[in-house]
Length: 101
Image (cartoon, rainbow, N blue to C red; front, side):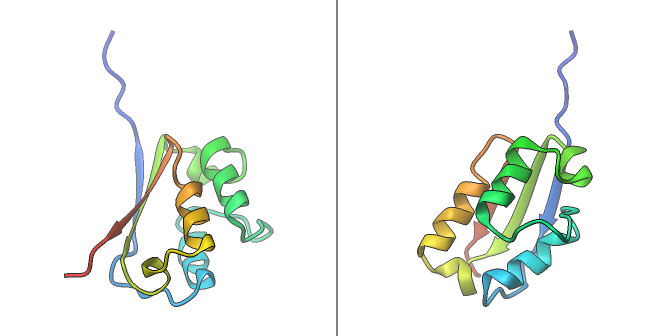
């Protein structure tokens, strides 16, 4: 039986500063096809990424990968950032934080 190739949605947000989590939400809403009514919580994001059924865009890919730079909100180790990392921690998604050059 041939091996199945996973489809990946790659959202590259490197070079964009995110001073607040709202900035990050604004940046991912369109490329991930998140509905306007979706709560801007890490629980809602995790549900969308891991369980599906809320975004036709996310559901049409096997894996969602988001790239960001380690700057702004992605430099802190606060509760919100840990929760955001957990939202991307499933098999279907990855948040990759790149060091600044």
